[in-house]
Image (cartoon, rainbow, N blue to C red; front, side, top):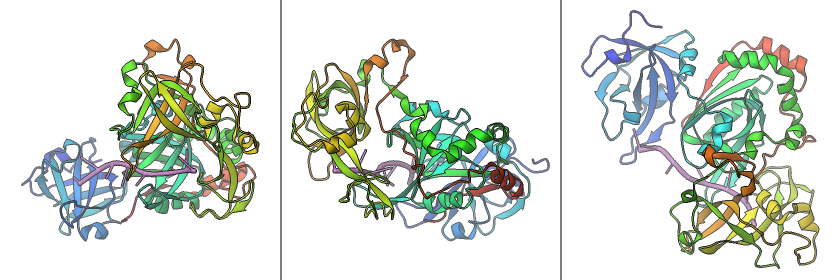
Length: 483
DNA sequence: CCCCCCCC
């Protein structure tokens, strides 16, 4: 790439007669400036030496150039307006900013520079993901898409409706992780993925975050971006891996009940703090809005109100409450799934205490089942007020809780929800290892039932092989379009 | 200009 052309470093404000060959390394979604109605879109361009520059499009240029500057493609660019970046606006301490407008000369270069691009990514191993849970640390991941769940609509606490869709990714060690795609990513990436399910798709995601939702999952942010590679054209190492392990992958794709019965190791690992100061004392969060949203507590749970309902009927797609009978198929008003199934879900309202105080908290799903040492179906069929013989009502020793504080709009205090319960005996002996990954009781990843009518992938190996050969244009780039 | 957002 690039002999007779300049490099990004060669171009300063005032430089004339330059041409730089670049790859579009990142393409953010267009946004509206906060203090003015101006629309802008940022790109990160990279030259052959891996140097990058921030380029910005404004106003109508955004739509005009949307098919011109494609993620992962190479271009010769000259006559962009070059200026010092306003210190206030500079992204990741880049000093120079190019403005792309109608007078900027852009010529497409038909060469594949995706290797340069990929080499600049720093992918997070799936097993390191727990370290970043709820931290908002920016991560990149690479994995093969083995499943896509039905789209669902969610109602946020702030009265907004959003669409989300979950993907299941597998890495080269066959660990799986859930990736939740939000809003425009559902319309673009997920739609593309659904249309290309017959191909084996490798997904490369940038600017993602790790959340504690659904046990542990990855989620998109506003500026996330994806490369989706069909049939391993982009990532050579996945190609050999994919061919060697073709049968295992096909099996994971088709035999979803295998995955259900053997949840990934990833989901049984959590980074529990080992330093006492990383635990929150209950007195510091009692009866007021807390600053932090997530925290670790070492304490004990007990049921104080015996006469409560320890389960609710839920939608198997979105977990929202349902008025249907167990097992009935119905259209869910919440997620808009037309064939949702009513299934019981455990819940318990409890008190969490430590030596400094107490809070009331709810546990739903797996942590509730773990605490009560029961399961949703048993809880549903239980008619009498429970006794210590029928379920666990209090803990004999301290356990570790990962708690989420949900601030209430009207109330001055928080609602607390227990997301994970970890038994400390599982981290004993790991004290000097820093953040210790341990077994935890959280929400397992849920796969589609094997009986589902949604046969999303072809399980037939022969067919998978033939579609591999037929695939001509397999390296694609897709991006969030204008919102 | 960078954020957020999902079960009772």
